[in-house]
Image (cartoon, rainbow, N blue to C red; front, top):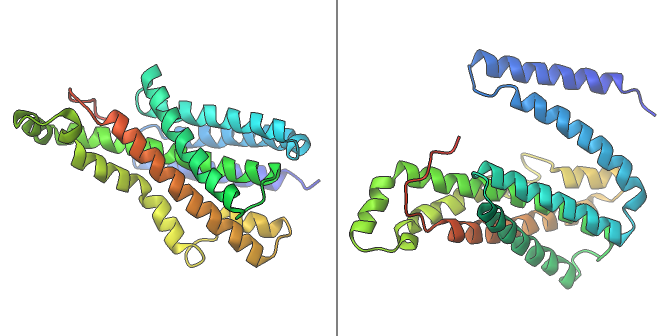
Length: 246
């Protein structure tokens, strides 16, 4: 087993740089990144130990994905101002996007329907759907808050709440997808995505790794698009000025 000292040294140094830079710039919540690193490290250690024994068992893979999805939906809902209604909207939007995207991949035979692939692809898609849901919701609330005079103008003309925020919702959906679109467009030129590198490290050929990666990216875009549109449609009918996201 390789020594953990170099790893811990690198993590401490990188975290210290992060805190120092954010502190010097007086960025609020500068301790959030190191907390995220510590929590992520512990969670990855636990999941690595657990998955060693369950990665080929479909029942345990399903349970693992259920836990991942629950945490993801709850995290996104908290970012949007937690309520049971918000959690229901986030979870419903995400599960629709994830199920449709994964269903297409496995139904077409692009990837074999095995527990290993279901876990790998499902985990990636769930995580990205969470990020897109959070970005879409926050962009909607920020847009409505900053352009409330415009929304009220639509109300004055007799527009329904859904119509009054239509333009803002469309812009929010696109903005939420921009990071994923850019990552997909620049794959192989600017970045070597984790799924691609991980597949090669796992022994796959570059061609096989590339096939898996492009399926992942297309799957994320499909799931994210469905998630963003459904989420914004449910949250879009705003009747009062929302608080500015923090």
